[in-house]
Amino acid sequence: MRERQARIEQVLSRVLPPVDIAPARLHSAMRYAALEGGKRVRPLLAYAAGELAQAQAERVDQVAAATELIHAYSLVHDDLPCMDDDTLRRGKATVHVAFDEATALLVGDSLQSLAFQLLAERTIAECAQTQVEMIAILARAAGSRGMAGGQAIDLAAVGQSLTVPALEFMHVHKTGALIRAAILLGAHCGTALGSGQFEHLDRFGKFIGLAFQVIDDVLDADASTATLGKTAGKDQKDRKPTYVTALGLSRARELAAQLRDDALQSLQPLGEAAGRLREIAEYIIARKA
Ligand code: IPE
Ligand code: IPE
Ligand code: MG
Ligand code: MG
Ligand code: MG
Image (tube, rainbow, N blue to C red; front, side, top):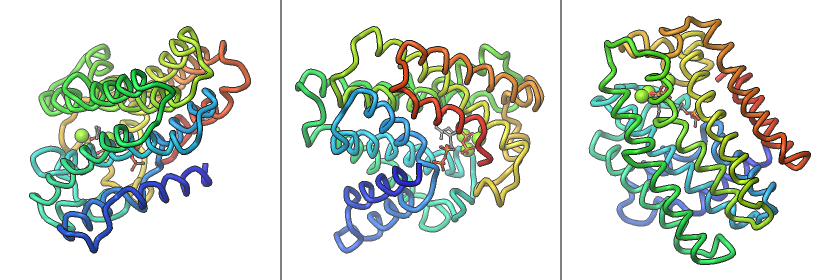
């Protein structure tokens, strides 16, 4: 994990514009948002899926960075005063606090564009048709029928109590979609998987993506600000419906464990080669931050 985290840090540092290129303040804020922080779960998943598909690591670098850049952008916007209004992220002041709101908006815009640039400007798949489909996968995952749509549902749900199916719908969009895309994109960099195996992998992604946000809800209620590097207890304060408000802490944890089991079950047909994905699934449930 540490080796891969160091690798993605280097890749991101290379692809992000240096601070001595104009506009320096924007580039400095982009680097502030994306570098030195975060667990890098989406890149870890992309690398693990790439390994399964016997992809060249240099190709997976591009998709791992692209998904992390979309994720980093989503966090910058998620923290804005018009959204969750947070001041702490990854143990640092949020981008709009360290810089300003307009810069935070533009950081999000620019990280998103850079993500698609990474998928388009180098060869990352065996054929151009696959590469175009990969661009579409990330676009769908980030857009109104994916992450951004899930965020809209999240904001509209403030003060309401949602049923578990409605919570699931929100979570698979706002968080699950991008996690699922990271896995598919990693796998598309290689050629070793058939369409049946892709379906198993995608089922894994759907379960583990949902589990990831269930645990995010649990940690918001059950961990400290110091451990999380972001403000704890924020969901309750903001009257957000979560798996914790719907089920309570211990049943929410149980559900996450069940989703992990379902995810692992989906990997069964992929055999030994999916070992790394299994380990990441365990980590997603056991993590403390
Ligand atoms: C936090 O994501 C926001 C969600 C989508 C749940 P992470 O828990 O992956 O945040 P970092 O990248 O490690 O900071
Ligand atoms: C964030 O959900 C989902 C996205 C950023 C897309 P949260 O609002 O729960 O994430 P945190 O808890 O602020 O990291
Ligand atoms: Mg939010
Ligand atoms: Mg938030
Ligand atoms: Mg949260």
